[in-house]
Image 1: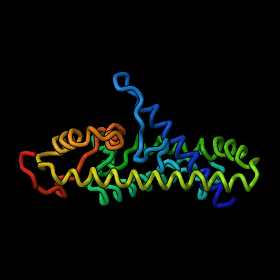
Image 2 (image 1 turned 180 degrees about the horizontal axis):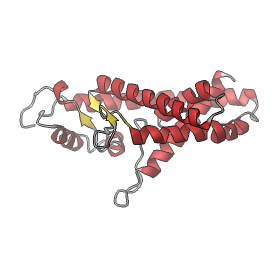
Image 3 (image 1 turned 90 degrees about the horizontal axis):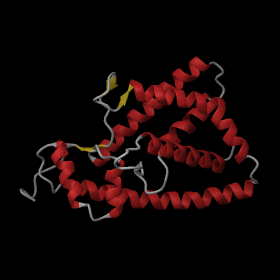
Image 4 (image 1 turned 90 degrees about the vertical axis):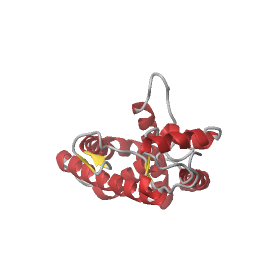
Length: 220
C-alpha cells in the first residue's frame, strides 16, 4: 500500500475514534462535546493505534492472540502518549486513577480491554470493509485527496498546538493552590475564546501539574 493510502486509513480511524468518544461521553445535560485536542473531528491516538495494529497484527489468525496483542499494543501507545503530553504541556489530559487496575492513572484494564476488542473487530471485519472501498478509488485521486486532507490536518495541528501552549502559559499565572482550583481559574480566564473553551469542554477533567506551575500573580 502507498503512503497516501496509509494516511487515509489513519484519518479514517482517527475520525471513527473521535465519533466513538463523542458518543461514549454524551451527557444529557451538556449534550455532545467535540472530543480531542484538535479542532477537526478526529482523535489521532485512535488513528495511530489502528495503523499500528494494521501494520503489526494484520496476519494473526487467532482471535485470542489478536485480542491480547491489540490490548498490549494500544496500552503501550496510550501510556506513552499520556506521558509525552504531560511532559510537553505540564498537564494530565486523562486520568484513570479512579478506576481499578490502572497504571499511574495513564492506562487501566477497562480502557485497554476496550481497545483489545476494537482491535480484534478492526483487523477481522472493519479494516477489510473500509479498505475495499478505498482501493476502488483511482490512485491519482487517492493522492490528491490525501494531500488536501494532510494540508488541513497540518493547519489544524498548528492552530491547536498554539492554543494548548497558550493554555499552558495561562496556567503559570494562576496560584498553585490545588489541581481543581487551577483548572477552574484557567477556565474563567479563557472563557471568551471559543477554540480554547472547546479544549476544556473536550477534557473537563484536565489536571495541571502543580509542581510545574509557579506563583506569579497572587490573588489574580
